Image (tube, rainbow over all chains, first blue to last red; front, side):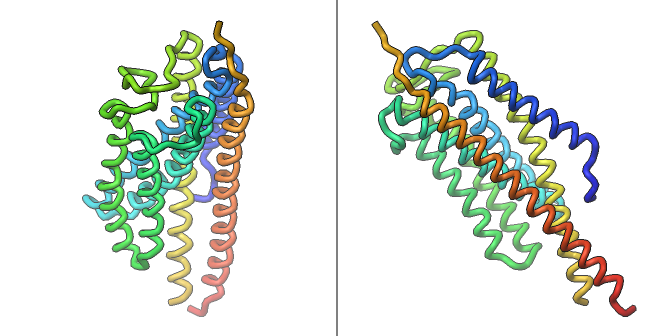
Length: 232
Length: 52
């Protein structure tokens, strides 16, 4: 368990390369957007972080279902890993969005539908760890957490669709945007390359971190089991 | 004529936040892993020393 698999090591190296290439494409290869200036380059990593954040929250919901069906502790480990990593990526997406908004919307934050639903989603999953911390019995903790992530995952499609359902200033880059949107732009072919490569790179980074975090969860469980055995 | 605003500082801040948070998270993963491995080793020693 503690020996790192070769495939994971290869994935680690691949992630470093992919993030470096994604940063190059976003910062150098993609042209500067004329109305926003260089801050538009934040968009590539902002969307990619939000994407993997949502991906992980959905994965946590699926793991929650798997736990409720099987009561196998491995699904609890998978679920906790997915939530933790997604919380980090989603927080980055929110902060990057706020940094982008300052020069473009002239404010760091506004309570429009996308930002509000994203903030609620982040808080829902922050509360997940408070819930886990408040329950001592592992079986009960895993059961409650599974139900919580299942219900919590409803917030993901709501957040994703918020800019498509409501009148909002948040731009929609792919699809039809609200007439009130500010800061939207049409992607040039070079921008599209940077955008889709960032999505791919961050998906691989997510898989890599997910694997690391699952291994950490398994090791933590092994330590707990051994602790019980020693104390008997 | 459009004048492109100078928003480079915001771009730098954005990427600094990204790399900063990722590095903090990686350090957190590594330190938790190291601590658990240390705990595992000492518990294994205690388990071996335990009278049968």
